[in-house]
Length: 109
Length: 115
Image (cartoon, rainbow over all chains, first blue to last red; front, side):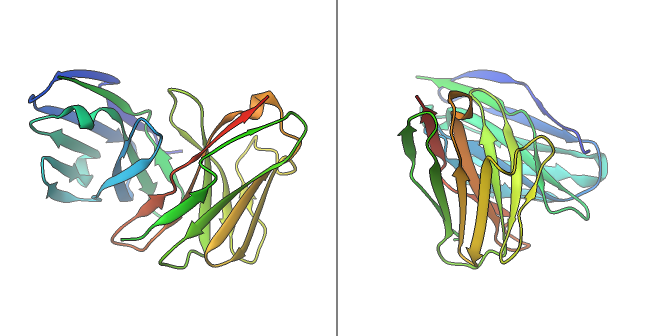
């Protein structure tokens, strides 16, 4: 099956700092999503981004499908950004999302 | 936006009893829903794909007789954990596809504790 690797596994930030999370995948995909899982377990859909660049407030994401990676940028981080960020992909021709192991982000005040 | 509602959010049950978890798509129809399980500090593991009007498809290693899935309508899928044991304690999350340009959306999850 497809391999989805996220880095770094853990990230500790000071409030106000910027950061970049990476997602590498091993095969062609037709869907890539970034999720934020908050401390209560809710998975929040951040971006649906199979290719290109999108921005939503302090967050932005870029997927380079031909090179099989995606980046999630967090700018001016806030304590509410803490949680686990998951990258999930849908293999071309498949209908089941494959998740990476996640990046745990801790933002300190 | 598309919303998936999941209930209950938290349940504690005695060993040997059964627990039903509901997953509803509130403002769209979902012919396919997905059930995941998540252990502490781990990623989501797909358990099964729920198909409206037909039998669910289970992932390898998932006991279909223990985790009963029913998808009787286009807006409701249920997962029943039968004869629950402490090792079934986990976080269960459902998901549905919402269309090509939005991807998949997830319910808020159910934390099951079997005592």
